[in-house]
Length: 341
Image 1 (cartoon, one colour):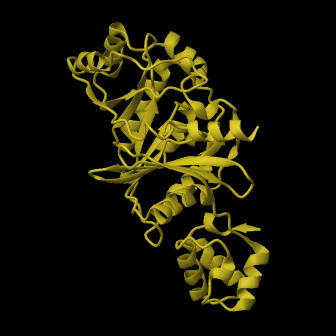
Image 2 (cartoon, one colour):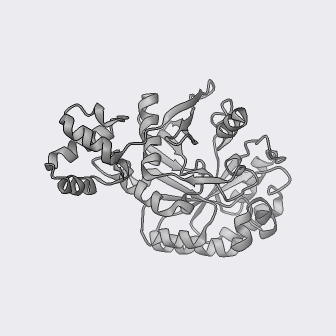
Image 3 (tube, rainbow, N blue to C red):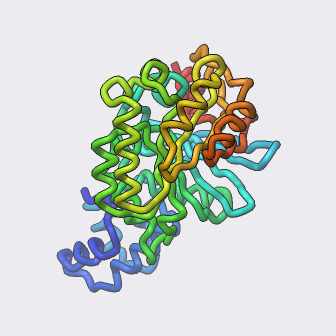
């Protein structure tokens, strides 16, 4: 079976040619796909024989809304999507003055084991397909009636652990005949898989790379992020410098502020020293509490920010959205899993 939504329009045209169908049929099908159809029978301008043939040899995997929560505070919408195999992933639609952003998942679960993240508690189940990633953007737009202008790959899963799929998704979502969302409107977040960061740099994409740093020292980072035990902060930052040299794109460093863990003054000073001379932006994130984790939000966010800025570091504090709707990554999926067991 061909996963028809995971291939480009050019590949789709070649496939239809192999089927002995005229080229315009491929264009018709592509247009239907991006209208969010759930079956080939809905493609009413195709001959019935072709619709039947496609049903037999091609695959559509539209998600269903398993749960939907709308914030009364700021209009943020949290979706729990049920996939064709019964697994669930999350997306979040966030509204900003500069446009609407959807945060999407790239895996069912995650194997990275970060201590502050609900997504990783039950481990990784499987990778998503390009179509399943694309559909999170498309069906969020359709269900909400809201046009999306920005995409963040910061939902459930580690994007660089599903490398080839993520690259194909980026090609599809950027395609001018599809959703046509520009690379500079896409952010990809990674916990720091250095070999994959180097590999990504070779593609020269103009997206924003966000590195989940969360601590400037190996002792702290290794406790909360197991990936650091095989890499180390210094090696990670060296890789990030190479990435900038190759792409010219400034890196954003994500830093979840955890009370008594990574919010000390000396850690702010060390972070400033490590980033000195490197084009970088630090995004301080007020921690969202996870029921299964003992980690608590820091009370020193403002002090930490001031200390970094005093040493020339560009810093922002992420605006907290959807606090009343389990908007933190993985929380809604975990709640649904607990209720089903």
